[in-house]
Image (cartoon, rainbow, N blue to C red; front, side, top):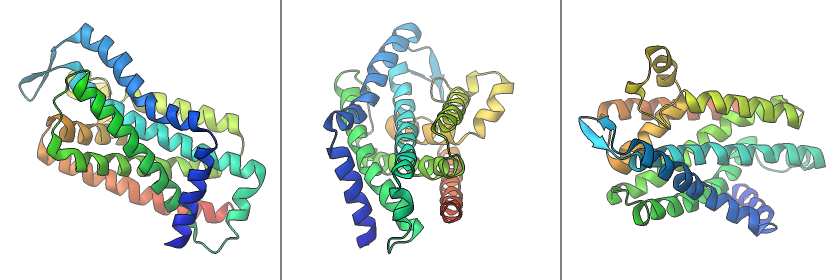
Length: 253
C-alpha cells in the first residue's frame, strides 16, 4: 500500500503547486451545470417525458454533467503521462519498487478524491440553486459511481497516451473521440427520443451507460434491470481497460 500512497502524495504535491488549477478543476462542473443547464432548461422546460413522468432539463442534465466531469478528469490525469515522459520522470518511475498496476492505481485514487470534491460542489449547487431533487440516500453510491467512472476512462485513455508519442496527436485523438462519444450518448437528451440510426451506437457507448447509472442514482429515472446491466457492462469496460493499460505500460518501458 505504501507505493500507492507515495504516488498519491506525488500527485497531491503537483496539484498543490498550482492552487488555481485545483480550484479550476473543482469549479468547472459547476459552470457546466449553471451555464448549459439553465439555458437548456429555459428552452426545454419539462418537455422530457421519462418513464411516463415529465422531467425538468436541469434534473436530467445533472447526470450528464457528472459523467462529463469524470471523462474530463481522466483526460487531465492521462495528460500527465506526457509531462512525465517529456521530463524523464515517467521512465524513472518504472525503475521504482512498485508495480505498474500500483502506479496507475495511485494516480486514479488521487483523481477519485478530486472527483468526489467536484461532485459535492455540483450536487450542492444543483440542490440549492437549481432546485434539483436529488435522492439523498443515494449519495454514497453516487460518489462510488463517479470514482469508478473516472477510473474506467482513465485506464482506457492511458492506453492511448502510452501508444501515442506526440502531444498534438494525443489531443487530436482525444478531442475527436470525446466529441463523437459525447453526442452519441445520453448526456444531453434521452436515448429513446433520438433517431434509430443514432440510438444503436449510443446504447453501445460507455458514456451512455455511465450517464444512465448516475441519472438513476441522482433522480431515480430508468429501469432497475437496465441500470444493473449497464453497471455490469461498465465494470467490464473498467476491468478490461485496466488489464490492457498494465500490459501497455510494460511494453512502453
